Length: 317
Image 1 (cartoon, rainbow, N blue to C red):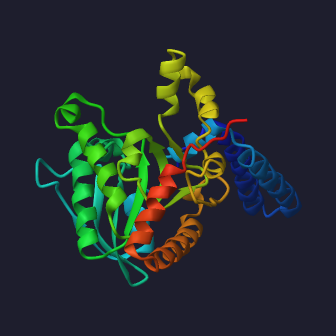
Image 2 (cartoon, one colour; image 1 turned 30 degrees about the vertical axis):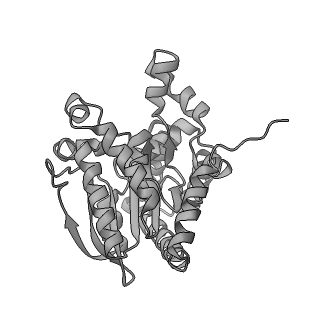
């Protein structure tokens, strides 16, 4: 399991407790009072560290290699998943996956960014950075969901859309723009959850939704901290300062009206107890599907339009 820098004191104390238990077992010595004291100290340390995370530390958790990805959420909370492929123009983009599934018996169209677990898979998935064909595939399947009147469930986890020459030559900006245009008018409920990174147009390209959720240690931003630091300070080392300035964590996003719900994570992040997060998120998704499905098509579209029009409102005194 990967260990983040600020987690090292926790890991060291856990190792000490385990070593003490092993020693006591081997020597048949009663060391429970000492273990209990250290365990209490460990819980206090965890609470103190994870309750006072900086924005940059939360970005590190959002990028944790053990964090569940889109396929993990589909496996843990849905059934009868059938993956669909291709944009019908160029190729199938493996960085953005999609298909039919059932959520507690409710048929849905589900899609999201998919990262890899090792170097080989990350190269295959392009580190979760979709090409234009990925966004075209998403658009094609959203329109298919509308045709069959299926709610759309979206998981966002990308540092951004792929900015390579080939992607630009094949119309990256146009593909994202067409998704933004068409998602505003799709007449079925759209619910989006940021499960890790929510970077720039790569996230927004499948992010025009009626309800937007974010996991507690995820972020949703116009740019990555490193990208922001490179522009403002000409130095990506300033990423921690950029992360603090961007105010892209759940609490700020909810205050600004950009998201609707923060999904709590266990101490240390969702990878410590995925079942806890999945149980909560599944209930939230089902509640949103029920509430949004009760609206007429016109009401749904009006609500979605006004939701995005209201972002960035301000008053002058």
